[in-house]
Image (cartoon, rainbow, N blue to C red; front, side, top):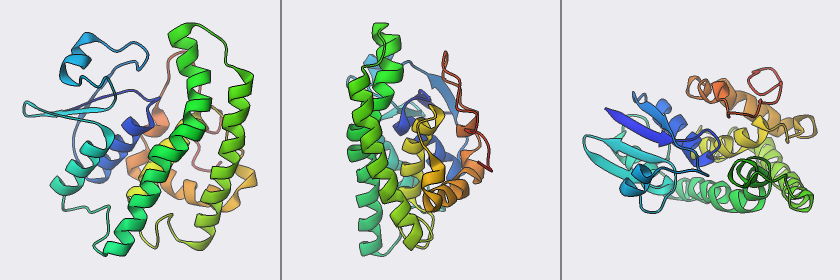
Length: 221
């Protein structure tokens, strides 16, 4: 049995779920709250981070380790191209969202709106939220620019870059903080991603205590 320990607020967890679905893997999910991780989680992943991937008694922890394992093990469906230059571009964009977007947008918006609330019982800091939303506008302009020039973010073909970007953006979209009408190319690209079978369970996600934006699950938004 393949088990993924995850939480829907974690973009890295969403990324791995989409990746496994694209590779047509069967898996079971178990939730752990990032702000209240169990001792069992720390026993199998001392880093105390999500997601954690378990199969046949083996444990793989960490976004990058799981991603590379799945890409190498699930060779029937490749999400990194063979061409080394294209592969470098896909990895650059993947890092952009997993690192830059996460630091500049996710940590300023999601931490304030969700994790700070549940972990500390405190209201968001409006100054930090404003910083996150300003950073979000910059990132959305970049996604829009890429989507205008390419069929998918990394090039002509759907890839790990699209999965990673959509995983991160979907969390922000759940909270209703993306004004899609201002980014028509990004919106068209995201509608293509939302229409993929691998994304359907992401659109069913429910973060306890927080309702999704009304348009969140709509393919025509």
